[in-house]
Length: 298
Image (tube, rainbow, N blue to C red; front, side, top):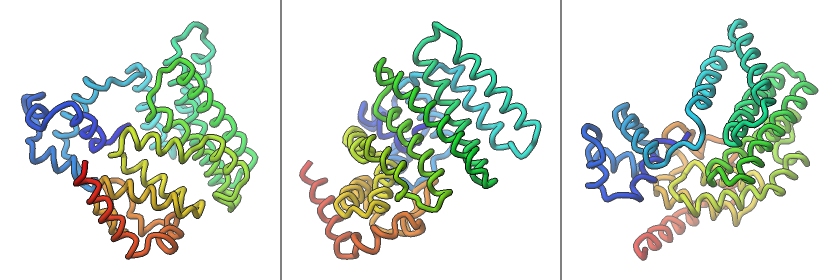
């Protein structure tokens, strides 16, 4: 689900600030909107979240039926409490129901794809559970099923042209996460052949750049690109994605900067290679200056 930060950026493309606040009777003033628009670390209050959610749904409606979105919410609630055996049984029942519904013929493609997505999420979580219990064969079996579900959902949406870049990217990200979590269990992380094969075949970094070209405010996507560029030890890609972060906010030049609901770059091992080998103090300052210069010439 898009963050409030991303939603405000999408909506701001439609209106001036004055026209923006004219869209609702009671809600954040221009100063509050700008704070949420400019600062990735800013935590929006409930009123702002509610107003922005309503506007975003009006202008950029969710392509998936509300009833199916409710099933995602229900599953998330059950999964959060899955230490309770009764909740695990309820998850099992939900999976049985979901598989039954997927076999019903004549269903709309968008519904079919969304149900496959939910099934993929359930299998992905089972994969993680098996990994924690050191059940490698079961983990790999769940991984393959999850990948198949996500890929089937992606194929349906792409063939029917029912999804935007963000949705397609998210599904590819989920598939990659399946590979990463299984390969991490074997202690090889990004050097696992299966993981690397999918990473390159799916053109993951290229897809990431395509999404950022369309929505450059998506700092979490740029951060994800930087993460993989660092893991792959690609200096060129590190510079590219770090520059994307700086275009969102110069605060990212500080590796201790912590955006809302994400750890600082300086606190994650995944960025160590980038920090130590590419993002020297001198280069970071130069990139900051370049981003400022480009911003002035727009």
